[in-house]
Length: 205
Image (cartoon, rainbow, N blue to C red):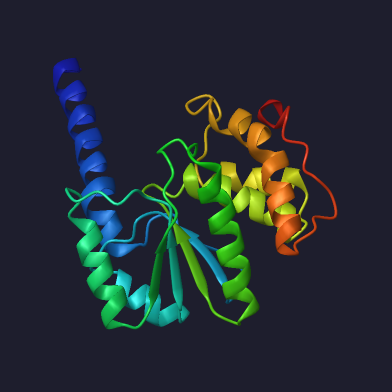
């Protein structure tokens, strides 16, 4: 057996697979797209401009909540703004760091904005870049504090969308730290959670 040839073939396959996932797949399938509430609340990673108009149209999206920072060097952002503006979709930004941490005001702002938009019967898409960390944190709190899902079910969804507590050890402790402030803010806004999720120990499950 020619082991060098075998190794070269394996390496070549891995390179092709990586290139497909990075450059081809996002043009065919919207990155980590899924419904949190059927026909009203959706989550995803950054959707390729070739797909964004069809995603908006197919799911009748009224509002996009982006958790990315406004960075002038990111080519995608002006394209997203142009597409949403042309299609009459509101684009609202509540920036967080890539690992899902950041200003607690962005969490509170995103949660209350989603709540208000859904209350008006508008369809909302929440996204960050990958659709795993920032979106995962916001969706975890929205589902547990507003939709009153169990922390176990909400955490399972985080994992299903590729959140990895070993690669991102900062997010869960951060959510523990901000939880009291978020709960107080939601209560002042008129959203009173039936129960406060137990976040500590989730990574061990």
